[in-house]
Image 1 (cartoon, rainbow, N blue to C red):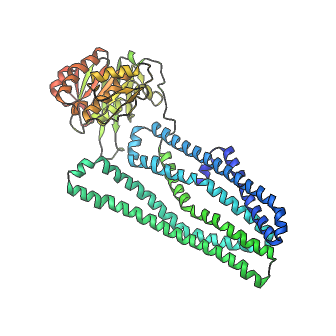
Image 2 (cartoon, rainbow, N blue to C red):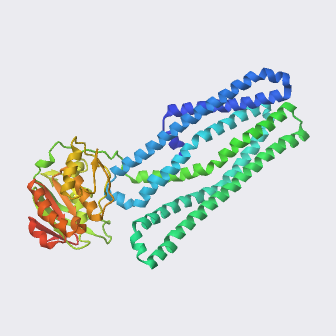
Image 3 (cartoon, rainbow, N blue to C red):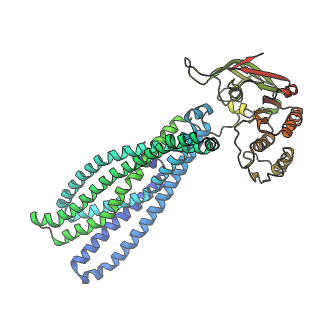
Length: 535
């Protein structure tokens, strides 16, 4: 999709208003050139009579210019907002496994860098439109002065623009390389921040990361940007040479072939110098729009990789989550790779989860515990088999219903700084009660659903994540290695107070843990071994 087509999909009313205002501004500019040229050639007496027209045209140009700028800027901001909103909705609507396959770096680069570049290009549309309108208006005036001279000038401009097109093509290719290099560099910067502890503890790894990863990516980006700028500079210099050449042709060439009237000659020179600034501004805006075009192509490819939808689906049944009895997996299978390739396979599994029980899910690293949780909660749709909730098959149409039964505390859980999605009137009071239970009341405060801080130790952060699960009050809790970061005191609190208290409320608890001395608290222990359930 071209950048122009993308922009034109927005509000047609705003676009039409901006175009009309821009055309009026260009027409006023051309009329001002004509009026100034007339005043210069007819003397001071005529200039007095032209003063009123000069004032009126000046005010009209300034007013229409401002209207075009404001309207187009409003139009550009609306278009950019719709783009960001649409991408966010698609990310939320896309299955988790598909997002994981796309990769965090690609998603973040698209949502931040690419959208910012597109925004910068759209914000330059008002200036481009006004400059093009000025050029169009002045061209009409030049054609009115002498259509024969204008035809010759126009032919020279067309030849010059063809040369510019050829010169600028290589610059565009380098800008594409620069965009890809920015995505790679973004990936390395994310590794720099996420892996800073590991890098600081190992000098050899630190040096290799800088020398073999970061510095080559930075150098690739630098070279691509410089090459793109260099080729654009050559093309821009060519257009400047063309402009001055045209002025020289009008001044000196026409006088030899067929001397034009003085008013025509001065009008051409005056208009040419007046057009030079907007023409160069149009040319200089090319890299901005070229980068915007590259980023738009990347965003469009990302958009096509994401699922359609608004990402705001709600449960499609009125059945109360608290009245459930059983959740069954029948012949469920999930694989991370296509058939015929080596990769981890979960299942086929037959498993039943019942209301009010504590289930310890155990197994070695890589046995499939986290994958089973994602399948069980509906984050990974099974590739074979059925999931039934109280006898109702889970499909794409009611998968959100299954989600609404679970509160999951992942081992890499993310903490939002607000209690989002919880609209109770006494939310703060309930949150404070649970903070006391979690022994965080001296570290975290809640005001209007906002947490005073999330900057805590890893174990405290996991306890704070449990606050949201308590407030959601869903029937099934999943603790994915939750106790691994807790101190011995709170480990005892978790096993001997929290779990029994939740079970007493009728909650079903799935606990992934290696603390075998606490397995007796549970109703049963389920063991996974390389994706299969074992006795």
